[in-house]
Image (cartoon, rainbow over the protein chains, first blue to last red):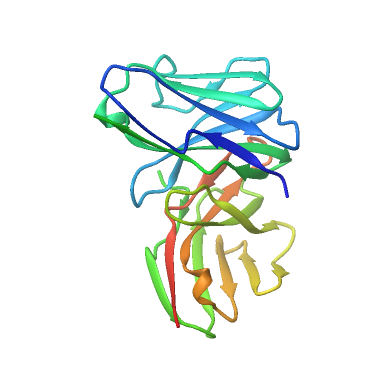
Length: 114
Length: 112
């Protein structure tokens, strides 16, 4: 089946630093990728929709200047958490769209901000 | 506003028995529904889906039932196996938006 690679799988950083998370579709081209965030024992919350070659579409309440998304190619989208703070600590998951409504998810990134 | 709800946070069943996971939704525009399985610290993996034009879809031990009038869907796993123990998310989308909206998840524990 289709594979989506997400890197790193976990990261610990100091407050105020920026963290970049990469999401790659390994064996297919994805014009659309999605970024989700999950707090412990809660649902996956869609943060933004990333479209190749255009600006990301952010969900209500998600700060676009805080969570920078770049989808420079058909196989790579990146999420940068800028000036991270402890409240940004969460599990971040990307997904890539293979066919209409058929999503494949990355393995997730556990971010811990000290 | 929780458009997709999984009201049971957890479910425990005996190996070999049937597991039934339920999901309710409120948005009548949803026309495609999916179930995902998730282990801790991993991304969800796709299990099974159903279009709103159907009321049942079966794939091996997994069957999804859709009741549009009740805005309810369920995932049946039979027979349940210990390896099925995980968190199960239902998700829904409307073709006009393409966005997946997830429920809160149900933790299934299958006891040997």
